[in-house]
Length: 68
Image 1: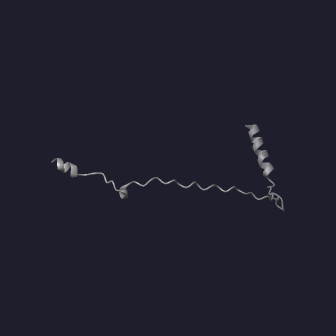
Image 2: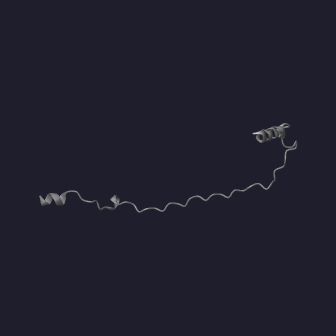
């Protein structure tokens, strides 16, 4: 019976069964710097859109708040 125990399971010891050594991961890629264009924004030729009744809307809202 002692002979069965000695011939039973054993840990494989050949180099083919070894766990390979850990490899070093490559570094993360570096972020490229953002380059902003040097040109400045030019205002529109026709100007900015301003609705004609915009001021009336704000006037009405402020008078309603004053009454409340």
